[in-house]
Image (cartoon, rainbow, N blue to C red; front, side, top):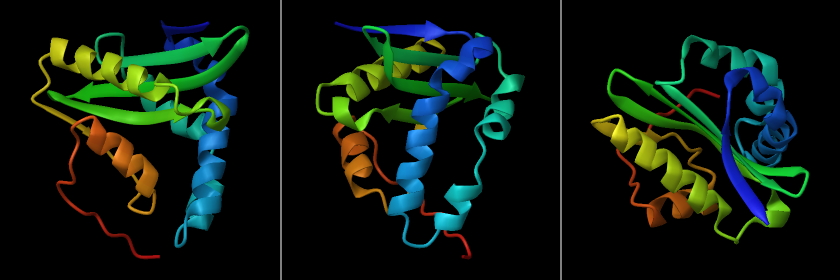
Length: 147
């Protein structure tokens, strides 16, 4: 049975293996930015979340038996909610775990009166874009980056 629950920032290493799978997925599937994804470091990326507290950040994990199979990290800054990172192990996709994580985080942001709720997604990641569209997210701007 899958359990979904929040963890504290000091437990962030629980998601390290899943986060690394997410990074590798982007590295392998990116046409233009493989080197960028290759150079991202878990510890460095997680340090960016150190400035948030329990009122401005939530980290939720999905666990099946003793194995962590998914996570979501969201933050709030100046009334704007952001899904910062979401990943479900590829062997567990299609079972509603990602959707459940997202709904939990969207509800949390609405409870915190966020005026805007957003997510940044690689434009190359078409399946994830479709996933977010099913949840009511739509493209707003396109940020382009020099290779």
